[in-house]
Length: 499
Image (cartoon, rainbow, N blue to C red):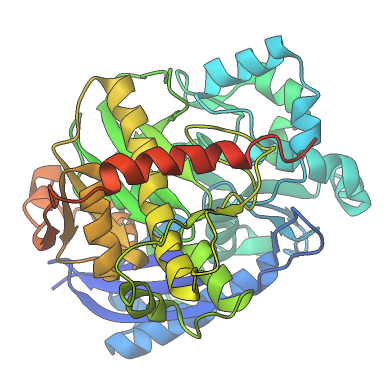
């Protein structure tokens, strides 16, 4: 029996899962970290806290699995993608709080770019011009944080996405840590050329990011380094897989071939469609991104639709409005009414992502009457998750010319059976949840296992995938017709809110 560790560093928490070679979980541990909100539109994390949580969850998961770090064949890493960390390589300390993917502070800077510059960036990277991505976050660090300016001048600064911060620390940190990232994370920075899979000099100049601050770009499945024996694993274990969280879920869902797709429901919502080795440039507001690259094999690309607020809308109902005490309570509350009572909720808290890409949008609740209750708002929140997903998947079908025959889904909200039934009704196709629902962590374990020979090839991984639950579309539902028409009307009300 071989064991593989998967470090899954997400927006709200960090966890370490130990899988055996059949894909079964034998131990895990998870801890949340602080969400730092200094002012409107700003979202930060303390990278030092994330590193501490990483060490704690590794120790906890090994204890739960009743194994030692030396029993692992390899570890893989998957991470919140665009969140950007800048640190001092001589001390190992962050030079500022990490800027999270949800942060919108760079919107004004991006708006100041010329149309020609925006076109160049979009063509080379496949991405939209949005604060979501890492390039403008790096630019902000370099221009607004005095400690960063000094560290850059003195050759002490390193910058990267969270995966690079974790690999650097796990492989020794200030004592000689390795500074690398993989193609999936690099493809989210606005700095990597999709065709060359390397940092692009023109893009680096546009965003003013010195190349020597950035990590080396590697494939998603190879041995990058070994863990420092004095670290949390207590042994020199190959770090052999890196995938951004959404690409990792594609691998965990065994979507290895052109035309296969998955939708992950987390803090945000992310749908990816594998386009094979072809770079498909979207005409319908989607992103073109790297799907995965295993060792020396050809790179696979994907179309992606990103929705900023899905699970975090339920957190908002819990934490800000306090109409529920725990996230799972939303299902019975929403079920207590037969429909949304005419209430529509568009949670555009930080603008709208795909396929609209409108930074000027803000959240709205429309259709309120005196009869509206918190149950109607709860149901509207679940419907919003599903309608936003349809917006993205319809754009995918338009770009690819392929109507999705089914939806493979994963992530926390898939435990909500009402929401998944609504999703099937709104899409008009079957929605399928796999038996192993921890697909994001599983994908990183698969990538690491491929690199060290625990798994032979993707065919072996595909054969491990099993269906866990299926929701069939209800042809009598009006959610896909009248409901969706009113949803589009609600979207219009969110636009042009910011001058």
